[in-house]
Length: 202
Length: 298
Image 1 (cartoon, rainbow over the protein chains, first blue to last red):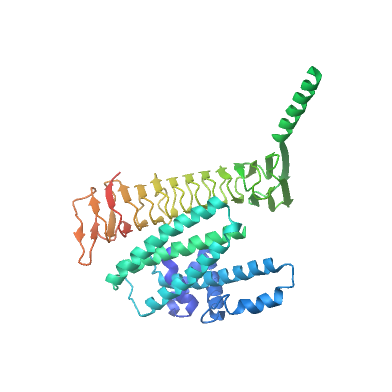
Image 2: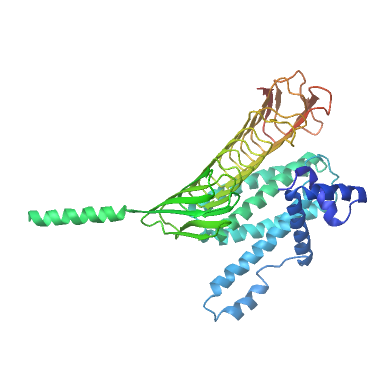
């Protein structure tokens, strides 16, 4: 886990947007901090993965018929379908996690200017979490019933929290604290869905 | 007839014995003092104990349908556990590891207990509880609906649950806990022991209550955040800190100092004050969407 106060600096470093003196001080920090080194590696990998993703993901509906035609004769179509769904889940998690990672302000900065990108990112988050939720429901057979019930219950809790924050934001869109709370709730939802995917995979 | 009844009783007794029979395995291998151990046991219990020996010893008790015990590895890394199908019975593993070992445990519903290990711990259970006693260097613990308890002290701990309660007590330097609907309780006795390292705590929930009860080191940073749970912070009255509390829809109660919360123009309440020269002490931040925030003396 990276040092929380380093989040913004690590992002700038990965983006190549850091001033030379800051870079030197960050590199000194990195030499002694395995957590931040790991975070840098993860960020670079995320950036690379996100860059290679298409601008929009159209899962399943268009591609699936062709894939189904090609694999229908095979006895292992079920495995292929599971792999496909997992790949979709991974891609969606990447998109959501990356979006939210960029959204959540560093803990030290309570106020962050709100740009137009916020609405677009919210929509992206909605689309991706919706897709993840569909996959979660589709994978329910791979989870123990009590685990599925627990996750479903807690997803409802977090959906209510996200909806409350969203409604409050609609009435006060410039409120930085609300943005922060919304981001935190959205991040929790992604974490929960990621947890569900991991549990289904194991 | 009497003989037949006797045979039947014997057969039934044998069947019952077989049905409840356990397999026991005891093994021991050499392992570096800083070696790695990976343990997998879906159901039952895993108990890991640190000891002052460069070896790893396991004592496994498997119920009849618990599956098969396996182990592989060398003097640096060893992997062991129980290979079982879904719905299998429980197995109890007691594993002794060198005190400085790195230990990774994964379970489905098995409870995980770790005691006396000073190395790095990575513990994960879907539904079981996790309990760590001792002074590990680094702890990561995740469980969905089991509880987590860390007692003793860690340099760094990250705990995550969905609905399980989290209890962190002892002298730790860097603590992070996240839960959705569980409760977080931190009893940070001797929080700033030594006082030289970074002291940091970050505690987040969605609906769960968060209670921080303890000392914050000079320069320490504690952040608490909840959507609708109650946030309660209790620190010694002599604490020198900058307090920054805000709730959008809840109420703030300050029993620690005279400063009283203000209504925000955009709704909700906020309270910001310093108990000492600003910026000279710790920093305590609490954020809530609609839950109450209580600040009081320990």
